[in-house]
Image 1 (tube, rainbow, N blue to C red):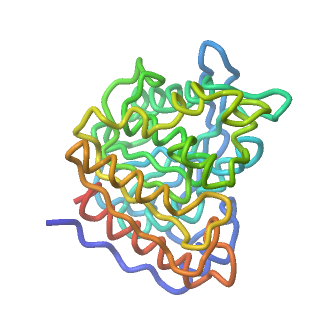
Image 2: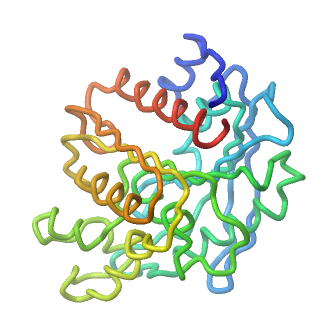
Amino acid sequence: MGAHPRPISEEQWSAILDREGHEPCPGVLLQTGIEIPGAEDGPAQTAVLYTPEEPVARPMPAVLAFHGGGYCMGDPFGMGAFAKAMALALGVATFSASYRLGTEASPTGPAIVRDAVSAWNHVRSRASDYGIAPERIAVAGESAGCLLAGHLAVGSPLVRGTEGRPIALYSFWGPLDFVARWYDNGQSPGAEVNIFGPGGFPAHPALYHWVSPLTHASDGPLPPALLVYGSTDAVVHPRQAALAAAAWREARSHAEEFVVPNIGHGVEGDNRGQRRRVLERAIAFGAVRHVG
């Protein structure tokens, strides 16, 4: 039995779908400039916190979210639409964190995942300060951000040193298996050059395998996962959803695939209605698997 989502007004949907993540939304509070201590091998990061003006519960269930941007750009406001919808419908607080960005000439390597560890440990240790229930924190990622969320969800060796496990995973059009991505991309590298450097899979076969969250998904049970992809995505092939769902089943865990028809990466295209469908599906999943 799940939670009952609160209705979102058309004015609020407009603030979610027609404005940027840093812009206001009725019923949602936004705290910016939160500092996260850096990992041992990296700089300090920042975060923004989206909370409902009228929480359903105190302390609040929460999501630790990571934005997209090809590992070379983007900021925490990129998760704003998701965060606003979750705050309004389910009373969820979203802590959206930054992480180090790289270039092909100066790649981040696997150390990028250590920033996810820093963010997770910060939210868990400061949960009472933010009004968050430490045992009810999920993780989410869009595109590149799914790498960080995915490692936290599967509890890979790259996130050792974290306390507790996420209660759920929201994965939006992100690569979770870089080896499959290489072949689906015509044996050509994509944005992962900003992690691995030039040369693609032939130059870095071990890294492509080790940095893929699905490599480490065999030790179940895993938190329930929502896997959202666009059917015509030319950036991250929707087969990633099927691969992840199969890995979750192999680990005796729950996963839901939602492949959005006729839409590309990040639901590109004439997509207002499709973006709302994606957020409504995330709310429904959260009501049962995260908050309920």
